[in-house]
Length: 391
Image (cartoon, rainbow, N blue to C red; front, side, top):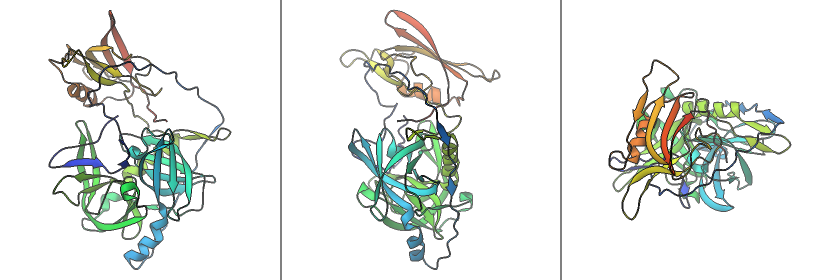
């Protein structure tokens, strides 16, 4: 998993309230330990595809107060649980429906690693929600509740046309305990390129609207009540105020469209085969240092893939010692890239991740890992496969 933090004069943090932590990081130097491989789940039949209706209401309001009243009920509070224990809270936006479900957009980091979800409407009615799909890279996820005829936000058609200084309205669940909170501000910058980790950038709407922990997944509306963004981050440090960010509606809707296109619902089991973004791939292993005492003598596999759609699922074992990496592209015009003689003295774990993620790999490309397993030296090929986030 990628931990989206960036240090300049402050820290860019995902604005989800979490009891423990909202996400895990490959960059963390995990110790190498055993992690048994699990078997993939069998695919089931009798699924149905989705046919979701979006709303396109044009509000005719005379004031900000009128706008807020019209859109207020489209924003919900989300509680996420692990083993029936509250893990974190965030926000979400009702954006569409079909004959059974209403659909909610939120941030992926609000729901990541969690198993069950509760959605609370503005009138305090609460419903169990199910995961329709999520995308780590764009930080977007979709939930569904079995309740229709609710208030749905309307997508702003072209976030490229946002004007600097235009009024924005944020509705969300700050601190995870104050659902339905409203704040206003302006668009400070549009398409601000933010480095969210060492190998990943996002173009976000920058705003001075008040954003706090728990606002993640909430709505950023314009003065006419159209949804222009999904709130996902802020800078947080002493002396820094008014630096919040939202995923532009155009980006969010593209991801959501892909998730809904690929998701399927099982009528008999009443479960979801989660949707995904076509072309995404993920490696599931985590690197760590091995050795004794305070000595770092090897770099190897600290934990292995646990999702059957991780490209390396079932291929690696915890404690495999990493000796080298070769990247081979399906496009034969691209040159093979190699990183050899990997040791803690010559290479850092961060440099290994950068080598992989900065290579612009696509589905069908192959990562070959040279590892030592016990007394064996192995060459393990990992063809990049379509990734689908699942619980």
